Length: 134
Image (cartoon, rainbow, N blue to C red; front, side, top):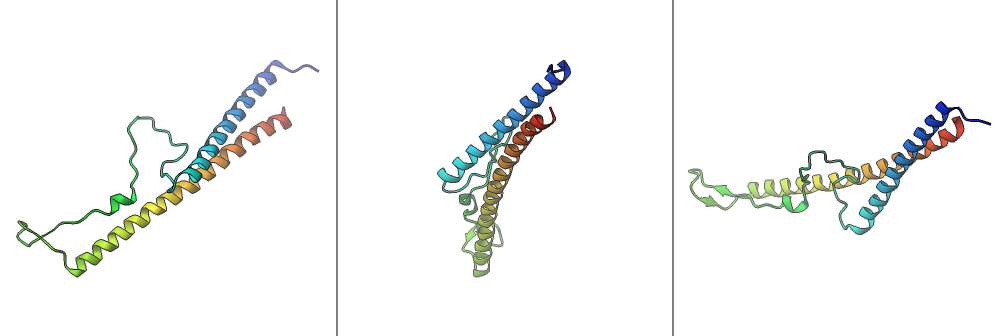
């Protein structure tokens, strides 16, 4: 049984693509497991985030939400103590901010798990399809 040269090349390319997808899936899965087990708070950066421009990415932290607000007198020259309404508003804003950070962490975790599984299944599927069709 001889293999046609065109089919052999196609088979090699499909194998290459399947292996690359599978390796990306394994890498993402390992990194996701590391993030889940070693970090107290799940990092907001995705395991497969690609930064083409080299600029560091910034993700908000819980500490960023806890900043003091300054209140001024009506003339704008002196600082003053906040009244009860302003204190309540400030606490609500901090609570909303912290909840937003927690939600972003949860979203990053779900995205990382789903991307890891996607690449694992794509790689395995391409390799299985190669066996079936070629």
